[in-house]
Length: 101
Image (cartoon, rainbow, N blue to C red; front, side, top):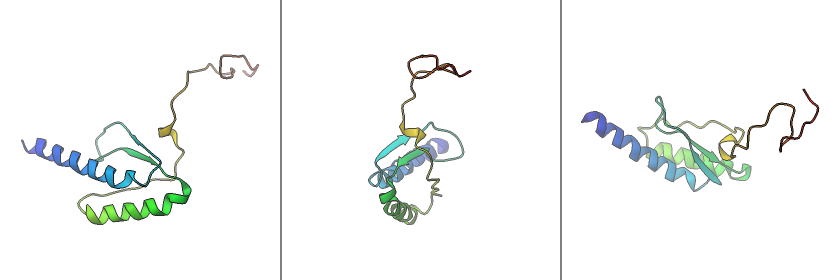
């Protein structure tokens, strides 16, 4: 019963934090759930908007003081690309042998 209530509160907090930050992002990518953190969310932020995004993070920290909000980045935007087909080493996209290998 208590564990269920805690899980429900965590879900509400994660959604509130994501809503607060996504307005200043070009795109949002929710990663897999895991233990050790409340939410695993990547925000794609244009360099010109980075300062505004960080100000929004600071505002969220003040409004949600019970959360430990951490920002990592800038990082490569791996969370925002679709994986293409796997190609064997030494081939170019489309399976053409490049002679490498």
